[in-house]
Image (tube, rainbow, N blue to C red):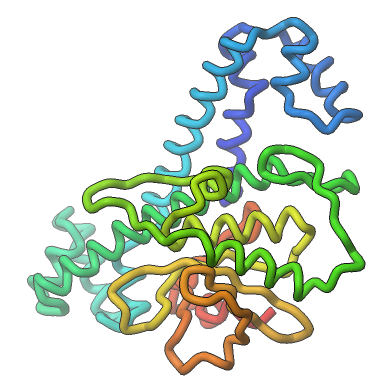
Length: 312
């Protein structure tokens, strides 16, 4: 995900305004110097300096949002492979995948078509997994973009923490961490569950989930993740996978590591904190997991550690 982060950096508001020749290098350096002592958005500082107007800043912010969305989508397209999903779910073997990929190099045919002709999978199975792949790409793209935006807004190394609006967050170290997690989990659970209408692909960021009070599983999980991150929780991951291994639907939840235990925080189905061991075997199977700008692919079955995201 480092390459995506580097590309995201090129869409920082200062760089975009420079490219548009709305500000100079000297003005940007001055604004960044001011920002070191004032925890405010760069755009606000530039407006206060009188070098950028509200309209120009709004245009740059709109462009920034579109560019980052496109980058996140491209990142997912490049990394998520149908073969990984099929081998991870033991629908095909590694040997079958290897043979299909060798044939694909020669014929340039679609991998799914080759696997059907090899009789490794049926046409109906292919269609089902293509649907899963499409849904997984959508969710991962949302998570990638949202977590990168959160990473930009969450202070590191300064002794201060900020929420996804860039506002300073006051932590309460005397409060029980368990109670704080439970509070946010209950809030996320109370958000109304609402799936995107069939045929649509709407991406919702955390502040929108909070404002609307509703969202689907990844909206609720990402909101919970960002709240915990802004509160100083570093031992958490956002996870995308299957709630049950026999489920046709993909799901999103948060894993919390505390005192050698792993807790599942699932705001779609549970308002209580449960340990992973409390669930039957086959529940909460991860495909991808995230922490800040890092991501882990648990579909790569040839790597034993990749399928074990829960041990610390």
